Image (cartoon, rainbow, N blue to C red; front, side):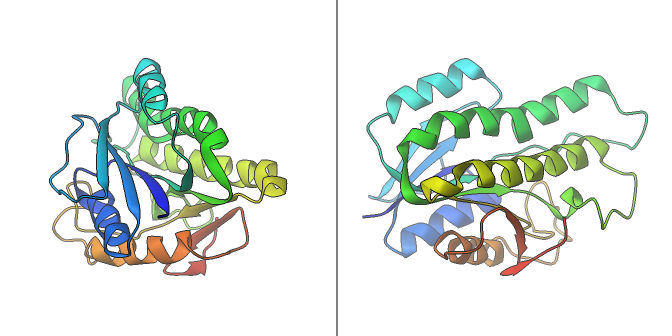
Length: 216
């Protein structure tokens, strides 16, 4: 049975992604800050993980150190911006800890456990595109998603010889606690697209949206 590790499965897109992989016969290793999730399945195991805490990351790695992973999805993220500028240091630091630094540290520690034909997918955002920026709102969030895209690009080059694909995905504007109730997309839509991307032999190091390469 193939295994996927998904961070942030307690709600929103992460929960929908976990449900999709489970429905396709995969074993899901999930994480949440509480160690719990609002879904149960015989092929689901949820661990406690605070992605912003190095000690929590190391404790999590120790717990799954005997696993072999086919797909890693760095989904967990936060949105703390309440205005535009001036950009507040605390908001930027917290956002980078969860959306960038934590996922990088987790990924670097997990690479030895990822199968040679595996796939690493970093959840990005339409706000992570530098060529399509249309406003100055949410600067901390924008910076974090732009930076995770660069990590995707560089890691893809680094892991090319190992056969591990690295991608970024833009789920669009989705109805979640972060996206709000006015968003046009249901979480099940990007969940389906995530599964299709994760199980496809796509060209490594690209930014995807609705199954197509999108602009950085």
